[in-house]
Image 1 (cartoon, rainbow, N blue to C red):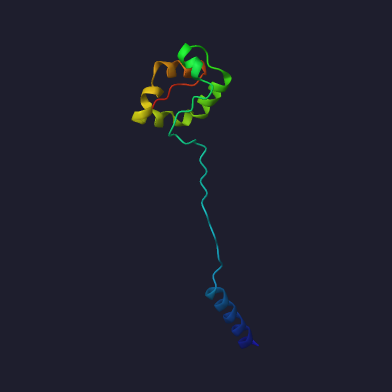
Image 2: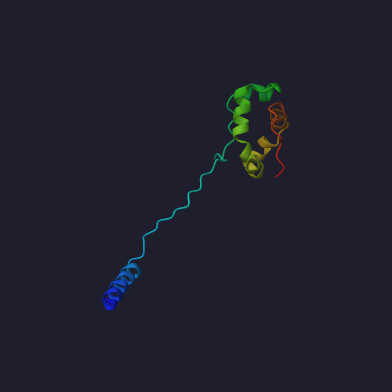
Length: 101
């Protein structure tokens, strides 16, 4: 009886060792940052040139792009727009602090 138990135990261990469990792992990284290649000024044009309080649509658009402001400032093609007096004024009207990058 002892030898039968030992054989069954060894066979069980061999099966376990020879076929390790298949474990699949993935890392999913989701970014909430929008693409930062262009500045979206939807609903902002008249206010930017008139230097008046932006519409709610404009403020919403500017707030959605807030994670991109440092990228805009670092981009030579966008820097002049992102750091303009009009941009500072629009951000201030919308309650968005100007970034410190």
